[in-house]
Length: 239
Image (cartoon, rainbow, N blue to C red; front, side, top):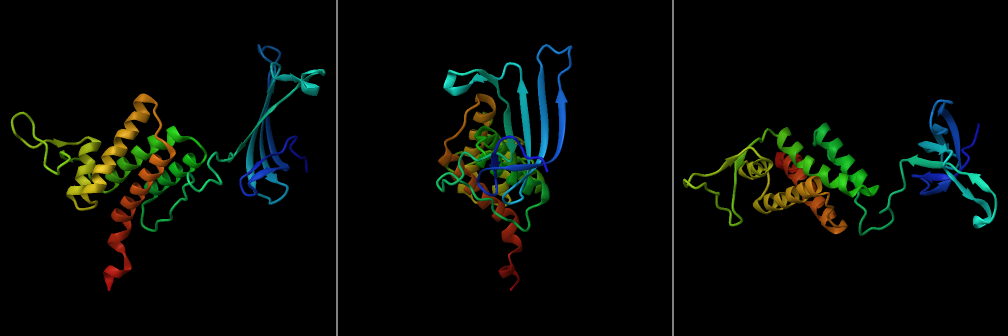
């Protein structure tokens, strides 16, 4: 079995290891292309633990460097990208988030939650933050909450200029709709509104929260998943 030319990261061994190539698909430039390149897509297997991964190997005529620390001849180099990638927060218990297992969270919500944890742990913090806001929307959609009254911070309903309560189908209204249906408590509703603001800043201002803010926000969302889907079917309620 042919071996990959360069050691790449193994998500199971948690280090760079040799990998054997199971299958390769290659694309090459033609004589008509402006830049000559070689692009290989490999399915590989770790030579140590047998874990399967995908490797993107790319090289073109502009990718070169000098050997012997810049004093030797020019040599051509290639870029190797492996998936799953090495996490930038792996091994750091302060930042790492462990994915929770839920028995009663529906498929779409569960998949979205899992993907958010995965991309966060891979270091894609902006995408994870946007996903966090989307997860709140997915929960509201799943349980049929599509509107609600808007509230002030003192738990009073907001009113328009005519003194009428404001009813909204925005995500802000949906979050308060969860509260009105007794699916979450007041403090959770207020924190979800803060998370909605963080998500909006990620979408419109390309702004990421800090590691600790994101992690604390996810802890609240996990509490909400537990409240909405797990508590109502808890076995102790049946005794």
